Length: 242
Image (cartoon, rainbow, N blue to C red):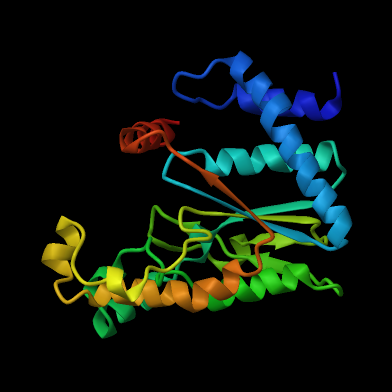
């Protein structure tokens, strides 16, 4: 058995997916992961430079797991150096969000939506990873248990120039809405907490500007579509138990 397949099977055996059998994971390798990675490899050879892959999907859809699977295949089968990280690691600090909640809107205290990430830091990290004259890069890590960033000493160290960069997160690649779509609240939260649509318009404007600058660096996007919303809760609960 090829080395990359052994590593893949060893990894996926540890993962739990609702209603999925081990045989399904073997088929996924043959019919999805390998063909997809081969296409990316061909694009990598054609462009002759590092590629940025954007991976998005709902909570519990498997973004982190699939990122690691792609990393195994790219490294073990194609001999490529891969760097994976989440947009979640670039959340603004608790202090920065408190200031934003006071100056812009109270809902920005809660991390998650566009506007609560440090886009300048993320953009600079991506540009540093893509530089021809590569130098060591540090990628932040966010500790959700304390709702704040880890100390610098615990950040991810990238010592070697990457061939493939995988950026994952639920809003990676998201596009802004048109102004005519921002006329009224669309849910209970907005109806009660954002009556003037200040929060929502700020989120939308962030997608138009700071986030677009980042997403323009992405070469290929992958979107993991959840069958329906009830699976978001099921898969999220499964993640919390593991």
